[in-house]
Image 1 (tube, rainbow, N blue to C red):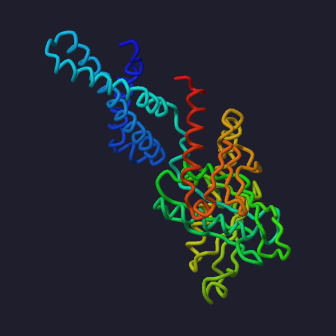
Image 2: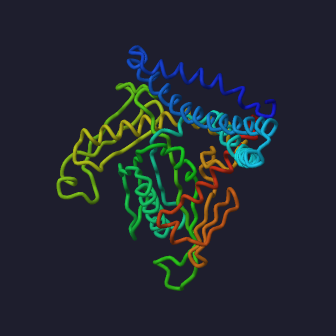
Image 3: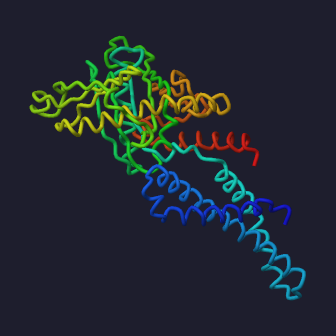
Length: 361
């Protein structure tokens, strides 16, 4: 059994799974929300790992049973069945081993969180704002396909369309673990709507994706926050523009400012603004972790350098290039229409390969 060394880890994993399973039903643990949430995340991860280990163990058992049958059985038909079973199981083993090893690599605990998406127009004037609007629509459609909920909390529209800046909350299962790959500078090469000469221009927009902080992740003291109320601007009906429902929060120790004006209700805007402020404070600490691993795994967009150019969208050639993994696809319209799964999947594969190499399991 030496060649199936992963089985040695199975018993300890099953033991830990049983422990966590008992703890999450303990009333004392349930009363401690921070501990309960973390244990619940660990339980879900261990559940997947135990199931994959069991699949691996079944294949190993099939091989051993088949070899015993070959040694003892004289009936040729039975021997042939045993050989087929061994061949099929041995073919599947390497794939399952890789999946088990990936699950054994400690996951980023932030991956399960919701996310805050922030898109800002960069260089390129009006065209950059139009492109920021294109990116926002791309992510809106992507979230819709995933069954995630996207809510805009603040938007500053461009003079010729699109957005100078737009911020949104995305809620759903495993949002940050997928959306983190979108952080960085996105470039567009096309003839701008405002261009009369038909020349191709290059513009840019910056995307930042932050894991949303839970209430227990950050302690906010009332005396550290200055709150301002003002009239909302932009679409939303007459009442939006005439009532003091928009909220601006300033965190005095750090100088971080957040605003929320998408709701008519002052209380709803305040709740969203507080959630965003917690997230931005939490991310100041989380960024230290990102900086630490960014030098090891260049494929991560959640690298510390959010000013890094990560992707180019070339309209004349219908081409999209992700510069982190030198991936070029010629289906720009589909991608800008929200079909970014292929890019993200390939980035995940690259990062997982880096994780395995780093862990050397």
